[in-house]
Length: 571
Image (tube, rainbow, N blue to C red):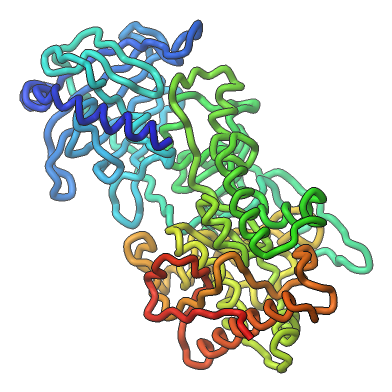
């Protein structure tokens, strides 16, 4: 990926030889819009390109949000004939225009997508900036916008050769054209900084809790129907897993959705990948740490904490940077299996978290390359008090705020160390009295994700409870609006830092074999001291009213905190 970026950067710099484009073509565009028509040369041997032509229309100069720039438009057609209906029309406003001086993501002020096949005309905005919201694919502005090649000459200020979506464009002709006045598009203001979602595309039929004792009972699950989506959207849910039919009910709403490429209604490539609210096929990476613990190839031989830390990091990396079902290249693989010609393009869905029970391994998962982490929230105050007592040998009844601060400290501390995101997911085992506080407290502490688990017996949260919690969060956010977590992250007083290669847990770490069963050997004593000291520092923060994160001291500066408290396991 780094080599790809360096190549494209060099291409952009060398293409400045076509600066006549920004003079000649721009002056033409001021008088009359210019249409540059390109045909597509496939970069995959023996395989036709995914579309035959691309038109670039350079529109009028304008001023948007006090920024002077130019409107421009892309039109891809399956057939080469100009009379063919476009697969999509993308109209953008930016200071720089492709294929020379093409804007980077922050340079897009407007992004309006017209899909003739469905009749949709959508203006995508980030609700925090009211500027364009772009698709989240890695290097979107490099792959999905045409760029002049380094060796290209110019004709009438227009580059003769460009790259686009992994293929090569050859200039077929240029000329003046009309800048079509579009009907007013539907405005979609989306919030990419707070993703509230449920884990499945179905709900329980019962609408209430089923007793799970003396035997566990599963629910009768029914697929979401069209009428369910307005109810969920009204409640504040804005992230959905959908199938091909369900996609029709959410794709033109101010929400995000996840779906596979294939199915009864497969994705339309490349048009659907220009939808900024389509995130890809992966909602989360499933439990890197738990899967490690359950792997019989591992848990009988893993001996040291440093083994576990290294393994969690590399297992996260191995899964995340793969094309498997939880991998960032899953969509790329699915499209290729569906016989789509991606050419030389690498299509990476980078923006999704791991969904994990062992929240205390967050630092090593984020170090391994994961983009975020969501904790499986089964928060029970009584169980928490007992777990703490095992290390402190003191009775203390913790408040709900203290319990949540402890758990979220690992998530936020691990994520913040690498500029990643975090959140919580409410499970059926979570204390129902604590669940509303869990979602609102996560929001206050800067969480990006608030999710709910659907399915699997007592893990399941009934649909009415999910709606109630989403509404509670929505009301709280409305009454306590927070600044952008991108530009103004939540301030934190204290970082409690533990030694590199270690982690602490209130759970039974039977799978770390250097610990003995009775907790009396040297390794166990060192571990107990470390956990006890971290708990003591957390209790001090509780008593002094300080916010805190728990992170790892790996030798680099620990920044973004008013103070750093380093804790070790020395006698």
